[in-house]
Length: 215
Image (cartoon, rainbow, N blue to C red):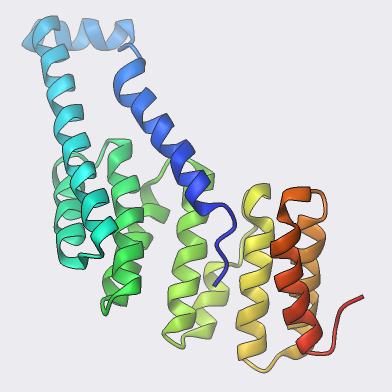
């Protein structure tokens, strides 16, 4: 199962989440509209409370994920989705929880959470991480057609190799060896411009050579 800097992508997204929740000032229009309703100080307190509560729940998801507690991760992530779905912690929590679900005996829960991220995350890179993980879960469940459909549209450039590699895994598993070779070669080509990906490129090359391909 391909990983391709997913952890680094999530770390970047976490920094963006912190910035969105703590660094950006509310625009003047919001001040005007909401000021007469609950007051500016009340609005600031409300925003701070929302961010703090969502952050605390996200911390609970991370803790549960670290210990492999699928139930606790699912429950904490669910509480974020129910009460704070407008924050970045919602899709970050769903990503973390879905990984734990997929590694346990709850792949359907993982699929549900990943589908939520795909539908709601504002950043293309986050949506594509979710698509890559969803396709991997679908392949693990034997649903090769669904996995290919999940990967059907082009991802952001940073995840192109991951998409191509996983597509190759799916095609080979489905007996489509020639198409699988093409996908693996596409993944290798996508990694060629990144010197730090040499080890990963060699892993894909071994898979390619195992089905009679490679240069």
